[in-house]
Image: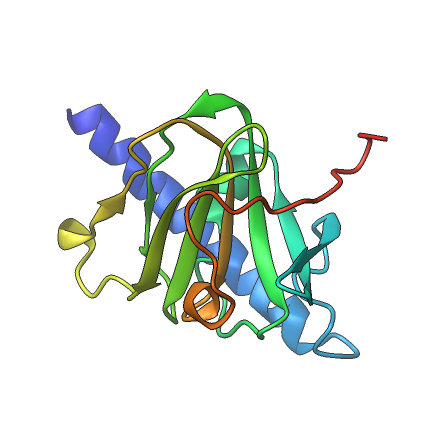
Length: 165
C-alpha cells in the first residue's frame, strides 16, 4: 500500500512539472491555436463543430491528461487512446477548470458521459469517474460541451486516427 501511494505521489509531482512546462510552451506560442504543441493532433467534427484534439496515447500522456493546463477553448480537447477496451477511470486532480468526459467504445459510440466535473480541491477526496462498460477511447472537452451539442449515450463520434487509413 505504501509503495502504491509513493508511486501515485511521484506520478502526480512529475505530472505537475510537465504540465507547467506544457503551459509555459502554450504561453509562449504564436497563437491560441497551438494547444498542446508537443502532442500529435486530430480534428474531430462533433455536432458540426471542428474540435482540435491532442492525442494522449502513451501512459505518460494519459496520466498527465489536461492537469495543470490553465484553460481550454471551445474547439479544443484531448482524446485518450487505449490499447484495449476497459473501464478506464478518470479524476480531476491538478485540474484548473471543469470539463465534460465522454467514454467511447471500439466503434466510437458514446457509452458513458460525466458532465461539468469540477477540479479536486483536496487530493485525498478526489473522486474517480468510471464508465459501467468497457471503452477504448475517452474524450475530454470544456464543461458544458455535451449539453450544448446534445451529446448522449449511443451517439457515434467519427474520427480518423493517424496511421489508420
